[in-house]
Image 1 (cartoon, rainbow, N blue to C red):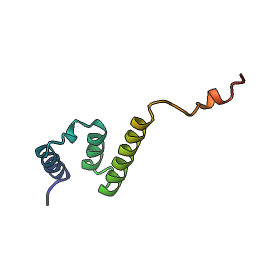
Image 2 (cartoon, one colour; image 1 turned 90 degrees about the vertical axis):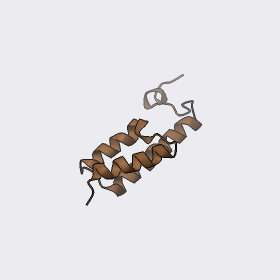
Image 3 (cartoon, one colour; image 1 turned 180 degrees about the vertical axis):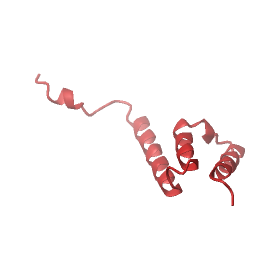
Image 4 (cartoon, rainbow, N blue to C red; image 1 turned 60 degrees about the vertical axis):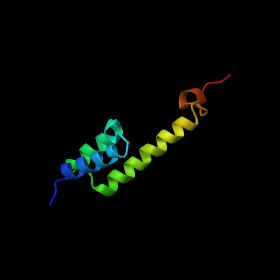
Length: 77
């Protein structure tokens, strides 16, 4: 049976061969480290990475913070 580290290295190499450098993504590599250490399972890794991608997509689509912070909401004009 392959170790989680071996599996991760093969997946990263496969994506790199396709021109996608996921090993340069610190968020992804943090999840890989948690998975290879056995801290999280693959389902959790996929869920967290999907959430990270959604968060990044939303931050790119709305560069301005249109929602006041809690502190600003309490300030009277």
